[in-house]
Length: 130
Image 1 (cartoon, rainbow, N blue to C red):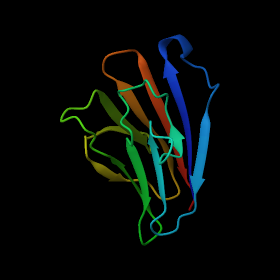
Image 2: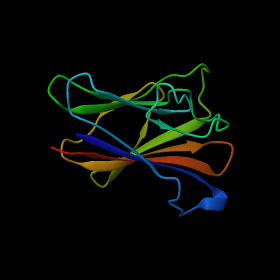
Image 3: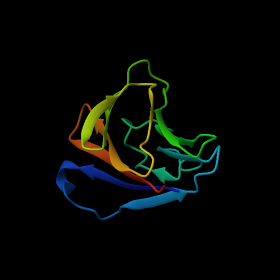
């Protein structure tokens, strides 16, 4: 099972957890959870006017062995207007545009989508139940 929590935070709301959204999916091969602005395909969606987040920004995919990975999907622009950072196991790393990284089995962490033009972010916490 992969559990996600998401909070959209602007400078005025820093530290607030109101509006936190949650989603989960069993660790079945091919299971998918998506984060982005498009409510029709994303289980966790951000405000429509937060254009630094793509229609489908992050995709969590369960592999054939029950392990999960996350991909920052390329959007319609050649250069993104955001940055994505992954923190897991006490270590932080940037996630490259179009990049994919495995999530730790039985672990937890956070992905932060940061707007390059304004003080706002989307914080997506994850917990991969082993």
